[in-house]
Length: 457
Image (cartoon, rainbow, N blue to C red; front, side, top):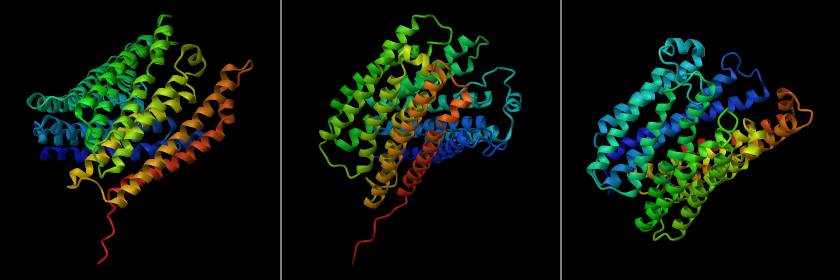
């Protein structure tokens, strides 16, 4: 059964994909600046391009999560959304605030932007991923509270399912941990300690609950497997996620001045973090193999399977590669970190957002699935983006290993920039695969406009 209020998800999905395109464009600019240092300088310096790239990543994923929730919650709760009008108002507030913030990064020197937006009243700016001006951060909190109010009342007034409750827990956790972005102590150790309470506990904690709920919802729809079976898997996955993710925060505390015991706690529990991602992969393939129906939306099924595999590789395997303290001693802050970050974000979060969009958008347009030609194009986009991301990760890993050898492990370590010159070939290769990724993303967008050929008379 469809609910008319699910339509509010549509603008969120469209905005998410539009911002995703922007993120990749700035990623390509940054990639070129690694090897052509004065590219677009001084119009867009590297630090500004990087800030825009990472901020767009966060914002488009948040739009995707919110759109997914607005689509999923009415169907799971078996009632209309509490206030579709509030959802649309918050959409425009969030979109305009996000656009103005990005324009601020691009058009105003960062120090001037801080003065203009009240950073002297409550200093919150200047930290990676949390560069947003104070006004933007306050706006994010307002939008998040209105969003949570809307979906929480919908869930409370309707049917409660494991999927909707896990999603609600993840979204409330996302909002609560973001509040630590307002705490910016002058002591650098404390600053980094609590900074991870936003960044780590988002991506290796509560966001995984959102991932699990969205993936479970799509698998319920495309496989027809009994809900009870999928919910049991979901319970086990989120339990492992929370146990390993929360204590695994310690793998960020090795070298910032925190007590020595974090080397043990961080190493042990973060070494266990691949387990929930591996379980997610087994879960996805198990459900598809046990499916009771052949759903016509084969593209959404492919995205669901890809999410399981790529999140395990990116977050699990590549996370484990450099998570143990004796290894991290040499690798932290190198291109190995970048390799892990790229594949983990793509595999765990970008893919699940594209999965829910792939499933929901045809339904919102009045059909169960896109036409066959459209799905073929979408599956081509899946393979282009996914294979490109695998090679981006491999090239960055190679660059990181060489960087560690030349700059940190060697008895006669090279200066930073000299080591960068030695690994430049991998940056060029990464840029080329980035272009392939962009082509795949353009195909993904185009696939929604493709129609089947008219039947022969």
